[in-house]
Image: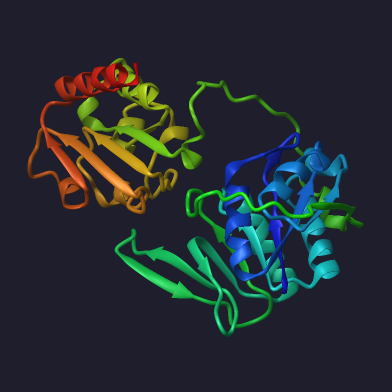
Length: 320
């Protein structure tokens, strides 16, 4: 069976969930070979093997931390040349898409971004994408070279499938461009204790109807009762009620959780573009004519200041 390269997104050896999802998808089209780079790369092997990686290629160098994406592209290209894979899968983060695009140019291949599903095809892997703000679903395949595909988080359930996970050192020679852009400083993001927005299984978002920064505590209370991430519409972010890093929408982040709860959000196309692929959508809005109700699986016509606290209390009581 052909091998499939999977780029590993990890933090000091802790493998992030989107990578485990990629391994599940990779097994549909071949044997996953993981590529782990940077500090702690070797420590990823156990988790990767548990989820189907037959081999783990690792390399650590200061360049991965000191410079931007080019060293990682150099390494992924080295892995590509060593393995000759049937496809290359990369998590669909901002960095992941840049790495994938640069790699596709270097190896003369086509690229598919933001796939939400993957299956084997007679002429190569077939990717499913959501197009035009998720109004349509398309199926595509790369017709030139080795497919390079980025996959959105929460596109597949993580499935354990123990494999050998043999660790091998990857030989990497950095190009002259690898040190062209240096990282001069880093500021740790303040942790809220909540899941990462794009990776969360449940997202609770607030919009213009929240009517103020202080009132977002109501949204946060519901999110915390569910173990969810907190999102915000562009209107709420532009008003300064919540950080831009939590914006869901066309100019913010795209999410695809199992459950998305929209409170006080009208449902403008800009917001819908970032959450329409959610598996189950619930809206709470006092305007029965709000566009968001055309999209939802469940809708509650009511004042969020009454509905959300009651929902939070009910969840807490059921949990114990």
